[in-house]
Amino acid sequence: MSKKEKSLKSNYENNENENENEEELNQAEIQEAQTNNINQTGMIVTKSGNLTINSLTIIGQIEGHYLLPSNNKTTKYEHIIPHLVAIEESPEISGLLVILNTVGGDVEAGLAIAEMIASMKKPTVSLVLGGGHSIGVPLAVSARKSFIVPSATMTVHPVRMNGLVIGVEQSFSYFTKMQERINKFITTHSDITEKNLSDLMFSTGELAADVGSIIDGETAVKYGLINKIGGLFDALGELKSMCREREKNKKRHMKK
Image (tube, rainbow, N blue to C red; front, side):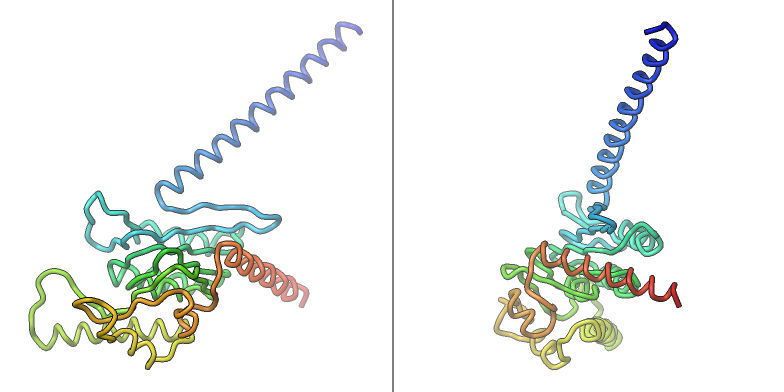
């Protein structure tokens, strides 16, 4: 082999090594970015074939306008809302999976997130694991399709407020209007009837020293609050099917 050929071979091998190192760095950067995203927002983006799914976890207590103690696990609405806008606008994201294990929290913040999810054009599926309590109920029904595992529970109860409440007519009017907003959202985005929702919400035999009901997965489906019993595999399968159907419809529309 001539010196020129040896030099060309050496340069080729060096370039190959550099490309491999760049790929390893890129993979490391992607993994680091995903880890940071999970730590900060509870989100991760996964790719399956030609579909890209964004998974959002809503856990602990939903934090609203006031900071909760540092030892509380929280979902911050100021983190979630911008991400939902980005998901809706991103051409790379095919659909959204919302995973719920929440005790509830700030009513207005939770309802704002639920309204955002419900108004998305992209396919959305929710999955209740552990619990979808209080304002977690509107969040669970906000997706186009909802799933719940058999062992999960959901607490349905009226609006309540912590701290000082002035005992005047205007306060009760505020509570009533807020409750009407929540009830309307739940009945609009699920198959539960207003009567059944009201019966669950104002039951006096379920919770100690409180009104409301705790229902398991099968009961939630029986009342029409949640669409189906199922786990992660079922929820992802439904979401992928919805994403593929959306892609087919887009292609049909483009041909016309």
